[in-house]
Image (cartoon, rainbow, N blue to C red; front, side):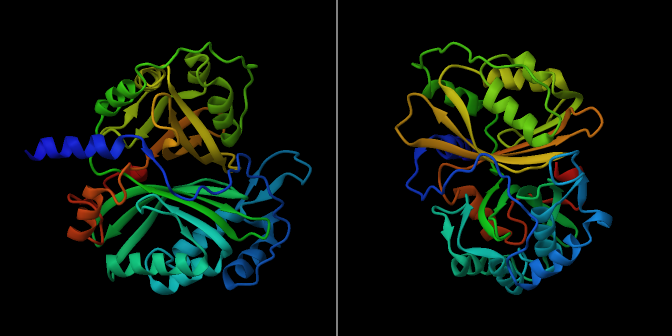
Amino acid sequence: VMISSLIFCAIVASRPVISLAFVPPISTNAVVDRSTVACDNGILDSVRSIFDNESTSSESTTLGNDGRGDKKFLMARSILLSLINDEGCFRTAEGARKFADSCAPAVVYEDCFEPQPIVGRESVATHLANRAAARGDGAGFRVDRISDGSAACGFAWTWTSDDLEGLRGTTFVELNEANQIAYVREIPEPLFKPGDLILDLLKAVTADATPRPPPDYTPRTPKKANEIAKYLFNDVQGADSEEGMRFFDESIVYRDFNFEEVMRGKPEVKKFIDDFSFPGITFVTQRFDDGTASTCFTWEIVLEGAPEGSTIKGISFYEVDPVTGLITYVRDVPESGIKPPPLGKLARQFRPALGVFWPVALGSREGGL
């Protein structure tokens, strides 16, 4: 009975649903001038002092000649690391307040555990403070990977407590021109991972889809992580899997949270990509950061034959080898169709600090795997 219930939850949580949530404006190219810090709160003041000395800062990255010199300052990354590690924005009420103070007045925080986005500074402060309080004293938040973005960035994270670690997820954050946090999408991993069941479900939904001719594209070889992701999803998708596979390292590690196990190596990844390439399914990208060695971006799955307006939202995180320009790591996380997800809600009540039923030893999952 338990197994049947879990399978039912997986099907319902994974199916397309009509979203009644507020849909924020889509930005597919996060490129903003970071030369001026317009906010006067403490977080941005401290980041500005680093920015003024960026030529010697480790938070700069070589980009080549882009009209602004050979370096860019990683404003979004720096702000997020300061808020998370120094201020404890996801662990304490005081940190939650700091996060809200770093936001635009009309910030949209799309916590995909919740039924609706949280809109506005005060609402975001309350949401984060309430979540921190529910997790309790001593609950930790670990950043496992973070992209090197300036206008926007994303990070993979894990909830921790004492010598255990639990819930994982990915968050995308975009700044406005005043370097305020304007948009957030956060998605925790699904606790029940349906595996190939999700593939069968999607194929059933799109069974009557009409095959379309592959799109035309101009082959090229971008080197920056965000440009590689844009090329693969906006140009090559649906055209030629071999063209896409040439961007993956032989030792690629691919974590898709619909599956329990990670995929390792190009043969496993190619089979996965080919399996999900069938008529009626389209991955539509929404927002990209401007990361160079790593990138984070948001997307939605559009299914032909599903009710109009039905989508499945998600976030992806890519890392690229700086020498070869090949993708070495991918993390995909989809939202749940039911919010809050039944199993996720129960786990947060059972183990509030860790958010899972069965935590693992702290540090046992290298890089948050």
